[in-house]
Amino acid sequence: MYKLYLAETGQIVGLMSLADIPEEFRIHLNLIESSKENIGKDKQIDHIPGALIAFACELAFKRGYDGFVSLVPKTKLIDLYKNKYGFEQYGRMLATEGTNSLSLIIKYLEDGR
Image (tube, rainbow, N blue to C red):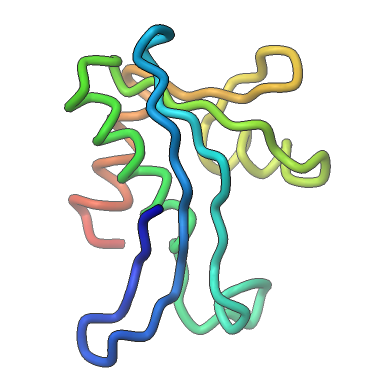
């Protein structure tokens, strides 16, 4: 489990549960959540899921998995993951790797957006 929190207040704004699957050279995202006030069009803080996904991608590079991160999305979120984060569909599973994972790291972790 990983949490994303505000340094000033300690308030948790996002949570993520990961599984390391070394035999398949991937990190699997079991759960990703933003706090209530950071969901929807009136959210207080933007890019929480992006930062969490980018962190998982960074971890996948550090483990030698070429940024390979997978997840099984809720049906209504498939298009969001594909369009906003560049995930590709593999049956019921979605995944990102390589160049796309690197782009997510740059956008959400290095650029500070």
